[in-house]
Image 1 (cartoon, rainbow, N blue to C red):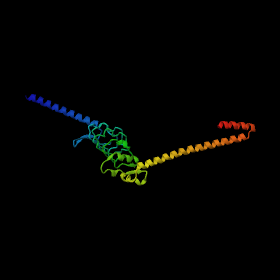
Image 2: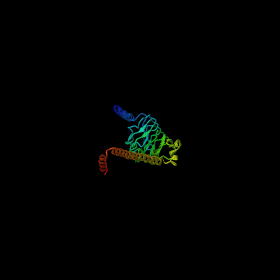
Image 3: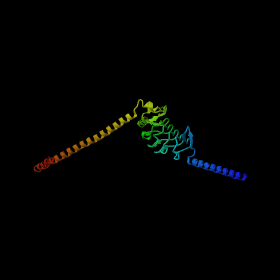
Image 4: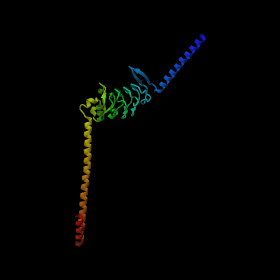
Amino acid sequence: MPAAEGVLLRSVTMWLLLQSLLLLASCLRSAAAFPKGCYPSEEEGLKTFRCSNARLTEVPRDIPNDTNKLFLDSNRIPFLPRDAFRDLPLLLELDLSHNAIASVESGAFRGLAEHLHSLDLSSNRLVSVSKDAFSNLKAKVNLSNNPWLCDCRLQELIRTVDLVAGSSGGIVCHSSAQEEHVGKAFLQVIADTDFCNVYKKTTDIAMLVTMFGWFAMVISYLVYYVRQNQEDARRHLEYLKSLPSKQRRSEESSTISTVV
């Protein structure tokens, strides 16, 4: 019996060791699949993927598709390409703050409209973004602490997105066509200035100037044409006067017939 017990004990020990090795290998494979500095976890019952301060220069591709909360803050990501998060249909929160994002392509958040309820793009390098980049997005968006250009494009963007409460004061004019707007909160500026209306007026004036230019060119051509024909007619009449009487009458008849 002792010998049998020894064999059984060794078998159990080997089995536990094998299971441990398999579990370790599985963990190592999972860790190897993630970018350095990224790791999955579970917070408040939600599947979370953290890549904070991971020195990333692009959005990782190997993010688990059942992720609910994604933290990509404090990295070096310069732009968001089209379909950057299309494989994350269950994403609820997305933190992209404190990066170097200067460009957001149209369709970057495609596929997130149904579930995403929080999007943080604060403290980046956004100057101008098309409203189409946030098309159909219902999430609360934080756009504060970016070097915004205050113009019609930003005005349309602000009207499109649902800003996080209290974040609007952080959307400040870093540059503007009017110097007095620089350094002021954008919502304070548009209380007195409608950038899109100003743009429309400028466009209308430009169109009027262009139309007037073309009209002036046509009038100038017509005046030139009439004057040139008058000069040609005068020269022809002088030529006729210089001809002998009989030939002159013949030429005049021919000219009158031609005119008729």
